[in-house]
Picture 1 (cartoon, rainbow, N blue to C red):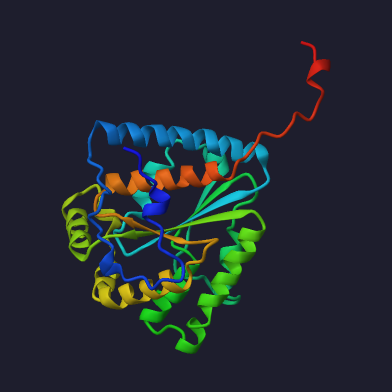
Picture 2: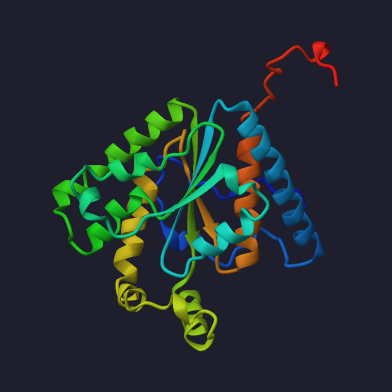
Length: 270
């Protein structure tokens, strides 16, 4: 099945995002079958080769931003999609509650420090978008502060893009019922109980507020250079398939080339 995942799941920049119009159950016609598993395996294999080329060329980097409500599958996406890449050239940064040092700087300070160097892939598990999400929902900073951050984020991402840092932003879209199922699974599965936190259940009460905050972030911070991809994530296998394809498609669109050898190969003798 030929599917342009980048085109199908890209939120149109400049167009208001309404999450109710994006079905978290959607699979773009794919089924969990042998063809899907083959496609996922081939794509993960492609990612390994493309990462090697990215590292060899050493002229640009790829930054992957994963956002989503609790139990949306950020950890699972990283574990499955990036399973074939070389860990030496891939770094995951998880952004939690800011430390005292981080709070002593502007909100983007800790983010910029984690941007991957040329040749590498960086993955943000949550990101600078928390500063227009959780701070908004819980009134941690005044509206006049967080409302200015949308344009500041756009400017920040524009700077990175213009300096050869390609950014992929994924919103992992799950339904409220699916989130409940995943929380229940954690409660009853001894191997997953360690992932349970009280905050997850408290935050669930703010589902509507977070949905509204996400819609604003997806709308106001989606640009032609750095768009958002809204990934239907109720079905984990499709989430992995879609994200892996979009990453591979993006790396291929960079038209990377191996650099010439630094020595004259003809003069080398064993």
